[in-house]
Amino acid sequence: MRGLVVYRKGPHLGVEANGKVYISIPKNKLKGKIFVGDIVHGESIDDTHFRIYDVEPRKNLLPRPKVANVDMVLVVFSIKQPDIDPLHLDGILAVLEKESIVGVIVINKKDLAKDEEIKRWMRIYEDAGYNVIACSTITGEGLKEIKEIISGKITVLAGPSGSGKTSIINSFIPGMNLKVGEVGKFGRGRHTTTDIKLIKNPDGGYVCDTPGFAKFKIHDFVSYEELPRLYREFNRFKCRFNDCTHTVEPGCGVMGNVSPERYRTYVIMLNELKDVPGGRG
Ligand SMILES: Nc1nc2c(ncn2[C@@H]2O[C@H](COP(=O)(O)OP(=O)(O)OP(=O)(O)O)[C@@H](O)[C@H]2O)c(=O)[nH]1
Ligand SMILES: [Mg+2]
Ligand SMILES: [Zn+2]
Image: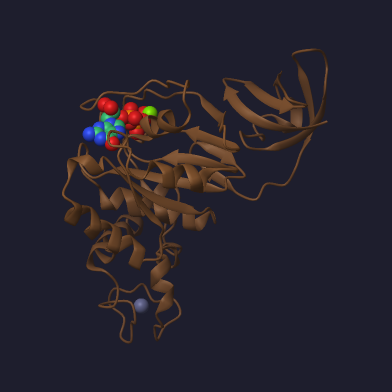
């Protein structure tokens, strides 16, 4: 039997096969090697239990939380409460770029800011080559667009605590009523979402809520050498040196040609990575 891993709860995995969800505990060589989103082969032992024999090669693996075969990540930031943090946003985008996972930027809480301000952020990221959707779970703006792009896919919602990930899922999966945290609790490492679970989308596919990171550290995910190519728009320009870091080199095509906002976070991250012991060379 072929199944999809739809949740993880402690050592237990939920495997959906033949229209049912079985419980499975991977053993021996498979222990710790199977993730939510994996396609597994095995058989049901009884009405509730499944034995996994093998796992299919995965097309990608989101590193945190570990979710396999992700079709798209909605990178959810709010325009206010909390403010957009471009360093955090660009860090997530770099990780997705590294893992070859499609990232779509969602700017939530559109109701809390002027259109001008939202458009300014949208332009920065659209120019960088990203699809950007502005929305509000209060006015409902932009939600239809999100509903359309996620249908039929395995979509993960990621982004800081308090940006509205759970609220967005609640808006298109009626009856889910996932627990929504309160503004003011973000930034203190408090998570209102704990288990990893693929929620069936009534329009087809699955959505996966994740808890916001309290602190996002780029060096947990990428190296100094990798960063330059992970700013996707930087690859449009030619530099004299192949290993150009786009900071001090003569003949650099990136410096002065990309948005100052993106370049600023790039330099901050590059400096952070330079100082990681063993992270360079
Ligand atoms: N003004 C406004 N508030 C919103 C909007 N969407 C969500 N909120 C509020 O923002 C707060 C946080 O929302 P959540 O959906 O819990 O945020 P989250 O991203 O799931 O947060 P974590 O689970 O901690 O990562 C809640 O109080 C929501 O009611 C919006 O579009 N506009
Ligand atoms: Mg949440
Ligand atoms: Zn360069």
